[in-house]
Length: 336
Image (cartoon, rainbow, N blue to C red; front, side):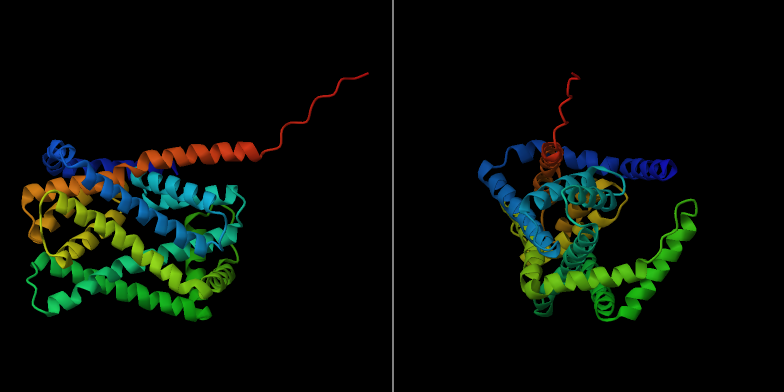
């Protein structure tokens, strides 16, 4: 475990070092961000908060509709940890899982629910470039880099949709995947207790998730789509705040590519890579270099930095709520 963490920290340090020059140049635009009209920043914060709310709704559906409190607190804390810890999404997902189990939710339901919610969120992200297809078909000029990003997103979406469809429909396919994962885990972690029964557990958890989402599939899908569209709208507001007027379809391609960059676990939350990548992609979309830098920093301020203190506060509230549920110690009686 210590070796893995050490390697992750080294990789993160090297990656940040490589993007440091471009980051230094980019962050020199921070004074321009501070000079933006407060109304623009307030609108961006409201959009990002609404985006988070759709995540809570989606996760609550997938978790069999528990109380909102544990879902909100665990998502905020897990999301914040994913932005600062090496391993990004894995660390954040593990924290959210533990917080939900501590709050009294069944382990199986939590594992299946979070997995289902994450798959829906990821699939809708990769489907976003499809929305730009009509504009491209009508002859909208698109730079080659954005076309490649759209093609990559479409290809990933098709692959995920195909694989997801097979695993949802076929017990045999899901059982095979479970056997492969279980065998690999037992070979790699030979010193730990062998894992048994994973294939059957995956089938059971999938069936449970389908039973929960089935009646509310439309609501779950709408929540997953709105999660990204509200986030994308925050970027559009950032561009409007600096006076840029690029075509929305091109900005959508740049946004999707930047979100895919954030999923690559090289640096926590894609720090550095997303800023540099989104700025360059916005320039390809027709935004001036200076405006692209300011808009990117403003967008990342509300989408990356502001959730960090919210996540820390959520973790504190969760810990206090657990202490409040523990029964007080029995009074010590006196002899005689």
